[in-house]
Amino acid sequence: MSADTAPSSPPAPFYVYILECSDGSYYVGYARDPEERLQRHNAGRGSAWTRRRLPVRLACLEPARDEPAAMAREAQLKRWSAPKKAGDVEVRESKLRGDRTKAAAQP
Image (tube, rainbow, N blue to C red; front, side):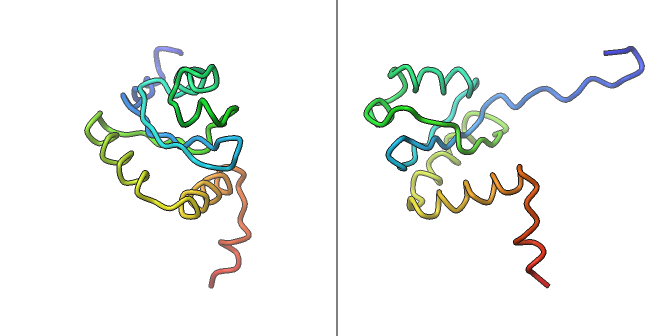
């Protein structure tokens, strides 16, 4: 980085994540380092739920301002039904791909 460019903002201290398991179920958690946490899950050291449903993939990731906010969001997402989690994941993935089909269909 050159001296005349401003440094980027520091990464969020915590992230809330949704994992999609091999059986199509979802697991919600939070971590400081979501990539390391994903590796732990896939190594069978993440949780009993994911250990029985390997491999898992990171389906959704969102920053949280601090640990209490991450815990609150995790609790909220855990109360969601599987179809609602799947819909949220689909919308986020669509945005990442740049899909405009849903947006174009709306007036």
